[in-house]
Image (cartoon, rainbow, N blue to C red; front, side, top):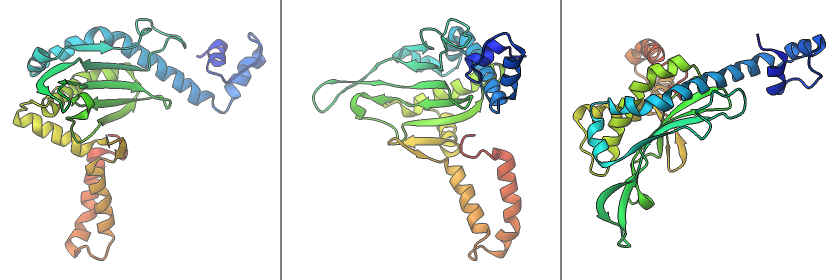
Length: 259
């Protein structure tokens, strides 16, 4: 059970400590449960960061196709200066990421300067809702002389649960490696990596020129809903539409924007 001091720190009581009335007031506060859950989510993410800051790079190096990227780019894990501590409330790192350093492209820009490539990153970011956003950033060159079509891809928004986050790390790292091969200026992705990245782009939301775009599959489902009720839909499609839409919802879930 959360004690009074914890309630005081998450800002839902402001009465003298050690009294029964203080404890009762904290429990009666309308936001008590939500803030209790938020605080627990912070602790879960802190546990995730505390463990992964030591293992994330090893897991990345264990991905088969990482070896090619690692020949040309150095990779590092950053989790904030206080991430080595298991925080109570303060000293909290809201992100952990694995990123590439600078790499040479063997090219010069329009001003005759050596053109470098950087930016491939996998980021886990804890938000104000108590959920964690998993974000992929592509390779890009200095001054954006070369960049892919999107600024970043939102792989998922998931509950802050340390064990569940750890279970998805290897899958996210495989996506990162495939994305790196596809977005590097001299990348030579395999057919499977191209398909993998195509599917991510199709099924995940993204930012393009700093503007949010829903996942393409979301737009497809919206169009299917619209067509199902329109006069232009054929009789057969109208009969099949409920089955198709039910399948899509069961397959991808109701949180279409972020899954």
